[in-house]
Image (cartoon, rainbow, N blue to C red):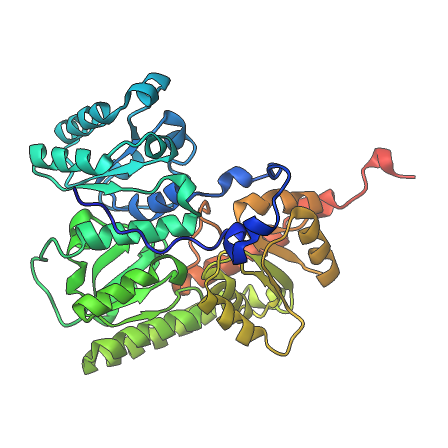
Length: 454
């Protein structure tokens, strides 16, 4: 039986810092907070990476609630298949927990293979199935033997760590079980792979036309808008771009070590960042004509983008904004907003890597701008009022904070329905900020109710 080699233990939890759990015990569990259910565990993190492989089937060995509470909570999009929109679970019951459910998992996986004939099946463990000792690796091997299709065990029960740790587990699963198992029909000198973009709200679709016009071939998407086959032949890429540095940078490092594929970390948030990413790709490919084509595309797109932004820039200029997102957006969205002429008074760094934090620290150096690790609703409202913020940009769990404080709010998290990547994405962000901040609802909300007037 082959088990996935787990990444190093997750150290993002406060209890892992310096043996803190030995020094101080909390008297009780933390109270639930509004929007808290939108957070994630390692199981959720693994799904984030793997579910966008749209033509594969994803079978969750769990009670129905594990699927019901997490399925389709991200706005990932696919142009290939709707399989990823269907949730499959073994629906573990109390009797299954007592008597064992490996046979039930085997039957479910075999039925899934027979009815849907997917190119691959991912089988996920969860807290319940892991604690009862279900051997999903052995079941996956047996299903693969009987059906002849790849069946990949994803050993990522929620209790092993955070959502980011689940991302790492999923990346390791792809490296050990998927990447390197297929050969593309043909290769070119301009093949690239984009790692850790999940095509949220169709953001990757704003980038692909730019690559095509520049003569760059997107060989593999890992994993937004991906098929199983293209992930399997990702080791043929000539260069890799990592979009979300904290999630799958280890994958890029291992691909470089094993297959000699150079990589860089970049962003498509903002005009300058998009241009820089295209130039870096062209430089790493070392094809002179591609570099010329990239410069032509950049010149054309930047001119078009400036013209499209012209109606919004006078209004947005010098407006104050607080960004509370984390991850790669902790710095990339700051640059994007500053391109619109806005003043960023602070940014959240809760889920950011050390590299992300360092980029933001250098950018904020010499200013009084805030780098916020974690804050509750009351703290956020105090910061917004103290800094004179005109708009609040955050994830959906902070929508309640914005509503309570009557602040204009733009959602930039995984549930968003608008894409903000690339040149067109910058224009879309400006449009959403303008329409949100000029909405008459905020004048009404901030007005004293007639029955409360003196």
